[in-house]
Length: 193
Image 1 (cartoon, rainbow, N blue to C red):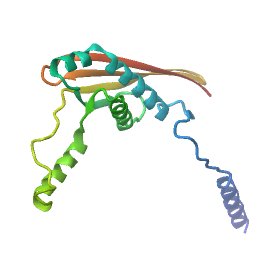
Image 2 (image 1 turned 90 degrees about the vertical axis):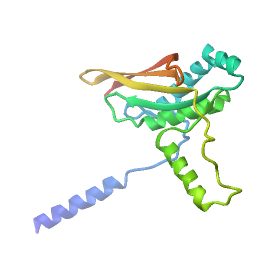
Image 3 (image 1 turned 180 degrees about the horizontal axis):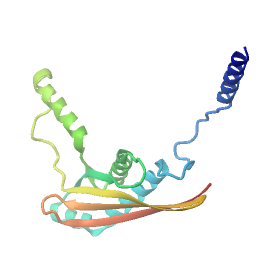
């Protein structure tokens, strides 16, 4: 009998604890840092600053002068070497968005997304009308590829922690393998429990 009463009380306490939770909609651009880990704000800020830097450098104007057009960039692998699980895709998409929004370079699709486009084009060869099917061999080739790494250093003592995130990116000429730009950005966080 006592076990049933204790079990019932525990269940009631559990339900009442669950009911204390609240959820509130917030502006997606607001900076909320709960854990001190890498977050959406970090990804957006780093992408914005890195793309502003890369587009302001001489490689772009040299290319435009020589070729008479805007350069085409593909963003390749940005490898996560931090101590955290970070999906680099969020950061990559922020960089693509910033590149496109500058209107200074053109961006082409990379990786598995490109494969999906090619599969669709292949399907159109059989199932779309002659007037609307997309032709093979007309993709826009990239002139440059951006690649990089995300690294971190953690310094921790008792209830205090400092985390340094360092993002290193390189822009490489696909024809010559020449590195035309190297950039890095650091984000440092002090966390006290």
